[in-house]
Length: 327
Image (cartoon, rainbow, N blue to C red):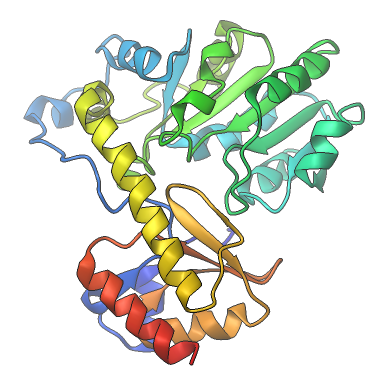
């Protein structure tokens, strides 16, 4: 099992600080989640049905010709490598480590490369996996560059997989609308933007052939009934989408400004987090944790990722901790 943010129970035990006293900034999940309504009893009591309207809502929201609801994009990350014979796979690094782990576990030849290497030299690869925007590196790519990369791979039966878990705040950059093209696969998560990480809900946008193959691999009931009910309503709430995108952008900028005033300059960012390379990242992570603030530590490269602050009290608390830790 790989390390991820959000291991709050473990931090509480390790540092002897009660769970409710922590400020968890270790994930890229929006702290301004969509307001979940009451869930009808039928969503719990009945088996999920594919024709409940969720697929149509997903097609509209993502502007995608075909979508498959899944139990978080992680489910697709683990299943997709098993749909191909042994392949040469180039994966963006540093990036979300589950991609490389899943392809290696399925017996493929994996090489982790920089974005420039993957975009400029696609010939060695049968499959290329990019995270857009990247986590934690924050890279955003020109959609036309990605479509050219896809065309080169597809011409020899290859795939381009684009993980857009953090794309919702910048939907104009998404490739979902192009996924009718064979071999272009886009993964989307409902956990980050909608603040619904616990629902374990996401979508795969791809050609009908790939969607069917993935559905056969995953089997029936790829997403539970309560999550389907909540997600369908969240995807349709267009007024909330507009407000949430604006708030995420402004709060991310506020966090970046706070960090920079304490000489902890941002290396990269998205609307969901700020990423800071620092040679003493491990020490800083430990010192924040001693004060009940959990941030995400990366060892290679040595760096910290800060999620967004949920309110003014959290802003003050992080500001005080920065003053103490970086004095």
